[in-house]
Each structure stands twice: as structure tokens, then as C-alpha cells.
Image (cartoon, rainbow, N blue to C red; front, top):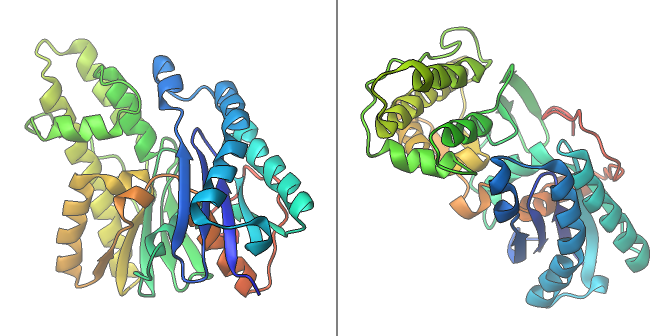
Length: 330
């Protein structure tokens, strides 16, 4: 039986297509970015994102097949993100995958985008040892989970409002760093000093997060402070975020003893977070597992890899959109 999976990911603003084999090796990965389109708005414009997916998705599928030297007949299945995400963007991917499945006579599997992120660590080779504490930090999501295996996951705590990535981007916009602002904020932070006492939201209140107050604190500081040094603002903001993320992760590791601490999502590419996480893991005597930076952000390889878990269990979720999916939903 052919064991090659084509993955499609269009949950937000990047059109991504990848082909992954039975060993988790990525045979091809195409990502069509929309950053230039959305940067003028300081954030993602959902209607424009959906339209661009329509334009880019079929060329991306064709390019992925060509690079991987794979024909439709070689595929075992097509995996596509079904949620959560932007509804217009999701529908483009779902309808495309459904059409290809009908035309090629291949099963189409709807994938939980969050499950995809969790599997991104094992792209290329297996890295995670179980049980593990998972910290997912991205533009749309922030949560901690306890993962006993690839199929048994318990949500420990999420964000009550903004995600980490969203907060980074909005602070970046406040500082005039453009969109997306996450990487720019991190780089600016290296040039400053954490001299501003920004709040540490919900630092000692369980395993949930809240970042809207921190974002507002930065906004008020910029509005009322007589002396504004962007480098120090960035450094102080990043220090606040790191302290919250690491403190919460430490609490989770104490409550749920694990062999590994896994960080996934776009913010997993942060140099500061990787450094602080390494210190935490050394202190807690657990292994730090990180996706290669290339696979930290949204991509279709993680969606294809997640589909293998479903197939191995004989589960084939319908490719229907669901914006309410959580990490606990297989």
C-alpha cells in the first residue's frame, strides 16, 4: 500500500502544501506567504487571505507533487486542516482537498490544526519522549497540555484572551516595527534593557494565561511616558512574557512529572524562549524538544504527519470546518 500523504494547510494567511512519506520525511514543502499583502493593514485581513488562497493553492499542489516526484496514484490520503482558523481560509483548503480526493479517488482526512502543531516536533525524525508537557505558543493559540502519547492529550490551561503571538504582533505594531512584529520585537529586545516593570499577568494563578493586560500596559506606557526608548520597551515586554511562560511551564512540570518539555507554534522560534526553556529543563531534569525553526510556523508537513496518527487508529475525520476544535478534540 502506498504510504505517502499530501497535506494542505490554509487555516490563516499562508497557503501551504507538503508531501510526507511513511518515515515522516518531508519530500516537498511549499509555503506561499501573504505577508506583503497584510503588512499594510498591520494584521491579517481575512477576506484578502481567502482570496489569495484560491489563487495559490492549486499551483502549490502541483509544485509539491513535482518536487517530490510523486503522482496522485502514489498517495495514500490527502490531509487538510479543518479548524480552528479563519473560516474563509479553511473553506478554500477543505474544498480543494475534497475536490482532489474525488478526482483522484483518495480519502480526505480533516485535521485539527492544533494537533498538527504538536506533531511538528517529530517532522523528519522522532524527538519527543512521553509523557511530555506541551507549551503551544502561536499567533492564534496559547496553552499548556499534558501528552501521554500522540493520541492521549489533556488540556491543562489556555489563554483567557490574547495569544502570545498576537500580543507580540500588536506590540510590534505599537513600536512601528511592521507586521508580523514577533521576530522584530525579539531582535529589538536584545538591544535594550528590561528596566520597565510591566505586569506579569496571572503569574501565580494556575496554568491559564492572559496577555491583554500586558498589551494594554505597553500601550499606556507609550502614551504617557515622557521618555520612550523602544529597545527598553521591547526588552521589558519580552522579559515579562518569558517569565510568565516559564513559570507556568515549571508549575505544569511539577504537577505532571514528564520526560520532556515540548514547545511548538510560531513563538517556539524565539531565541529568548529557547534559551529560557533550556535553563528550565536543566533545572527540572527533563529533555527539551523543539521543532526545527522551519517547522515552528504553520506548514502542511505537520498536517500530513498528524494524519498518520488518525490512519493508524482507523479514524478518518470528515473534512468539515470546525472553528471550535481544541487540543483535546482528536
